[in-house]
Image (cartoon, rainbow, N blue to C red; front, side):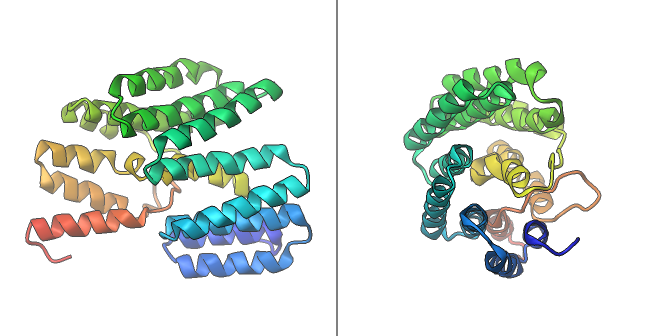
Length: 275
């Protein structure tokens, strides 16, 4: 990796992939010192906020995202301001405020659909995915299913390079809908045929979009939760173990949610195993 401002993001991402968050944040400090304008400073604040959120510093992360939003406004970049709002929307959903999350995401979707001619299907699909998880969080299962169907209908129109990632996300949310309906068997069947996807690009924006729905923790551990619902703790443990180990041979480059370690430890205790 060649030295430079953007390469620092790549090293930071790889460090977080290895669950070495201290090093990941150290690299944020390095590219902070390289920032030459408000746009680059905004990217630094965003990346720092993303890492802080992932490691549990939620209020700090929200402050950094608001600073990033303000700095993007200084350089007149309304698009990246909207990107910060989308990230915050997923964080609000994860924090238990689905109504505010849905309103914030929908507001940004309306702006983008109105002013962008390219990638509208991607915008609409991501919005529908978010609505589906919001519906589940609010206990509105059939509204969630309808939003998932909207994602499915948009698949042929997606930007080709993003189709595999959206197919994976769609399978996850469909499984979550079945789990919400109380049908753990169908949820397991869907999860087991899900085909993980790698990131579409290596720019900070591409990597952040790749992580986006993972900011909502219940999107990350649907399979083990379905096994728990079935009373199959052995399979749940195996599923959580896979979620707490980075598989270098597979395509996925998603960060490991720290909470999955805690969930696995609780299952170990329940089974009388040593964590």
